[in-house]
Length: 162
Image (cartoon, rainbow, N blue to C red; front, side, top):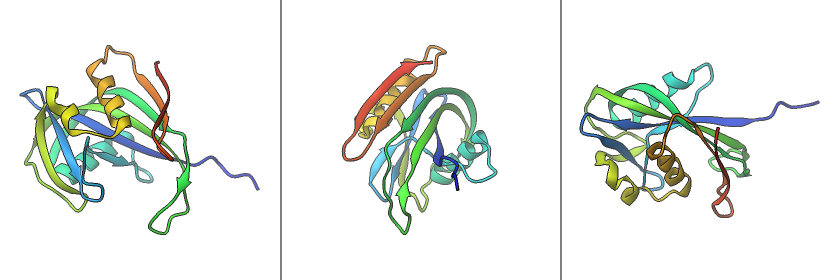
């Protein structure tokens, strides 16, 4: 029997406030700073998933504005927590505007804060996230597409504007 291809679909949002600061969250499991986001659940649309993930991870309410980056982790690797193989992942990166809420933490995050746009790259260390943040900084209306693998080590395979 044939099987449909399987991809994890995820979203993240670069949230900017009225002071041009960017929202960052620190994930508990890896203790790394990142842009809030996560996997789209069954039956959920992309923008609703992003609004939910940002609220869950940081306590912040947002509006979703523009799609700026699509990235694909085309590598697969051994799973964890009882899962088998981790399939390829497609991540859609959006810009968002802060509309309310109070910074907080969650089961997934140990810290959340506003960081000046110029200092974001002092916090984030994940190579793919760095590439996606640079796509946001250079956004000119054209969407950046990034292909990469993370295992055994990070390898940027492709970076083009579409």
